[in-house]
Length: 84
Image 1 (cartoon, rainbow, N blue to C red):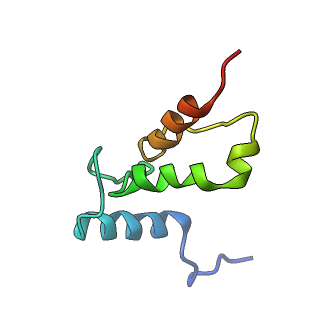
Image 2: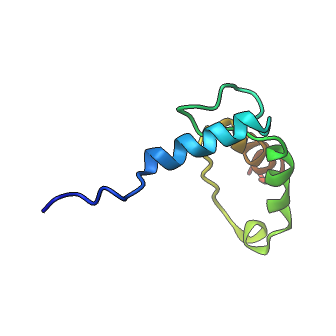
């Protein structure tokens, strides 16, 4: 079976998004955003919005990947976690 030549790959989409973010100055440190999970302007504020989610208030464990755009979630989880 021959591959579909009209198909857009995941890598093609990544390249388009990275190019779009860089060309419109939507990216935040670290730059350039190519070949990484990009940080974006407003990511910290977006992370802080999870505080308002009922599921976040009920959770007992939080797993957050170490990517820069999720730094706000890591900080929030540490601030609201009661340690025994």
